Amino acid sequence: MRSLLITGGAGFIGANFVHHWLAQHPDDRLVVLDALTYAGNLANLEAVRARPALRFVRGDIRDTGLVERLLREARIDTIVHFAAESHVDRSIHGPDAFIETNVQGTHSMLKAARTVWLEERTVPRHRFHHVSTDEVYGSLGPKDPAFTECTPYAPNSPYSASKAASDHLVRAYHHTYGLATTTSNCSNNYGPYHFPEKLIPLAIVNLLHGRELPIYGDGRNVRDWLHVSDHCRGIDRVLERGAPGEVYNIGGGAECQNVTLIETLCALADAAFEQRNDLARQFPDAPAARGEKSASLIRFVKDRPGHDRRYAIDCAKAERELGYRAEVTLEQGLRATFQWYLANEWWWRAVMDGSYQHWIETHYR
Ligand code: NAD
Ligand code: TYD
Image 1: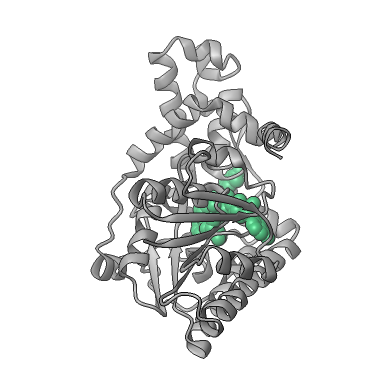
Image 2: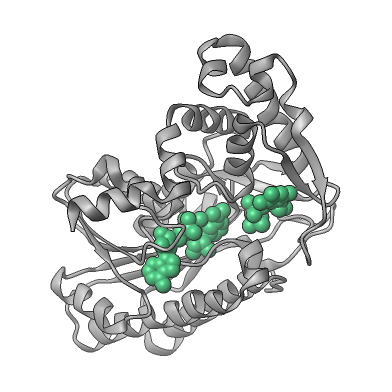
């Protein structure tokens, strides 16, 4: 039986991971530590809120004393560290929060783990798993080979630079102090509970409202898309089979240009509105409600400064050493994600206007 501390567990991937872990490891205990920034929301954990194995603590990863207390009190033996500022566009406009949370916050987590696990020796075995990104490797040309774990770091945005710094700290705490760390660098996630500021959920919510679909630059930038359920399985494999000190790339094997991705979502919307009359009543402002093409909303807008052209992940190491393989194809994953947003209008409306947060705070505090 494990006792896990999951930082950022009220965010997109962290919450999906909490759902995954409770389903796959029902005997384990979980503490979620999350500051509930704009990106974190208890609505993401609504479906598991009553589970006795789950405890939620609102707090900041930079509060080293709090993290140490949690590690001791719950006899935590496994940290899965998701908490971060995660949006590239926000990092361009306000990099400070990225340094504070991603660099100082990760260092605070490492310091607490070192004190409690290595000095006080509260548990016989421990693992610090750090969740990072493929963006630390920089940008690829169209014919370049995909990123491996040996690709030199070349981060281009304040976000990816802050994640790169945190990866180096994790590495250093393993080499210098013997902390049993693992790191995973993954590609662009998508799926349920994805805050509608990132490309896929933003496009879905906008097209349902009849709002423009902004595509940066020429729209030919390529991302590798990883369904969040595959990512959660990948992290699970790292925790079960990964070796301390190692880094694993986790990808979806699904490279796609942004413009193609958006056109696919538009086609999914058109087909869904054609099949279901009720959608036109639910979303009367969507072009598809009037029988018009959703793609009419596409707008090419000014490019993001320093916009990385292409990311691609080589997962051979994770396949070989962990038995990891992405199971959800991009077509299946986009269809399922679009359906999830149709079925969970309450969720995206609540997280966008903050009303769920207000409701939970007045009812549960
Ligand atoms: P997210 O922005 O949806 O969630 C981040 C969570 O961290 C939120 O719940 C937020 O409240 C919490 N948080 C932020 N600052 C905090 C602090 N100081 N103390 C405690 N909690 C804090 O992010 P995500 O998309 O779920 O990403 C999770 C992790 O995965 C991040 O480390 C990110 O860098 C990495 N990652 C994400 C993607 C992706 O496509 N989303 C891809 C690669 C790597
Ligand atoms: P994003 O979801 O922000 O993830 P990241 O920048 O971490 O890859 O963006 C994915 C891609 O979509 C990226 O190439 C930027 C582009 N993009 C747009 O074209 N329009 C948008 O409105 C957004 C948010 C992103």
